[in-house]
Amino acid sequence: MKKVLKNVSFVFLLLKMCIVFGQETSVQKRIVIDVGHGGKDSGAIGINGIQEKDVVLDIANAILKLNNELDTPLDIYLTRYNDTLISLSDRTKLAIALNADLFVSLHCNHSGNPNARGVEVYVAYATSGYSDESTWFAFQVQDALNKGLGFESRGVKFANFQVLRETIGYCNSVLLEFGFLSNGDEADYFLNIINARAVALAIFLGITNYVNTGL
Image (cartoon, rainbow, N blue to C red):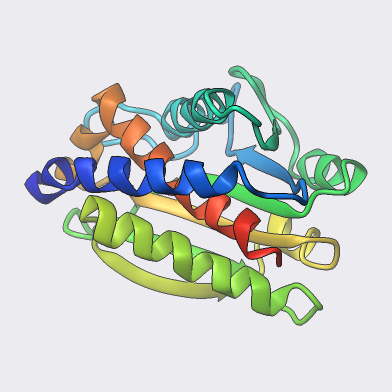
């Protein structure tokens, strides 16, 4: 993961540019960040013992911190703010009740193959008025994580995950899989909170770009 550390400064530069333009945004968008797993549901457990629920919460909290540093913060909500288990249906109901414009679900991957690595971004395997915009956003985030942080790109994929299936009819929605905790390099990467913040930067860049497009 040496490439990841070398390219963090690149993301900082892009983020600063994005913040400047983001302050000019006239239409406020509402974003719901779905923080995967939580409570008794640890999600994937890394080869080094790190837990998916903790990694994604670190990333989500870092996104909130970045947002709070803006002169005009974006309208961002989390599905959980601590180590609590929230049902999948309650996560999607929250996004619908808040009339979200964008739903982003955060996860880490796991495989029986210890060499599996890289980032996957999922869009609902369904057709709605939000399908094209969701796919566009998925490619933007995939590109930021690949070019900005050096993660291998495993592509934008389509799936029938519940949180995507139940939100795609109401808003743009994607599900992110940040590397494989079953891979020694990628699991160790997330042991350092600074790296979780770097991932948060890449995602926040994608969100602010989305806001600025006026989609």
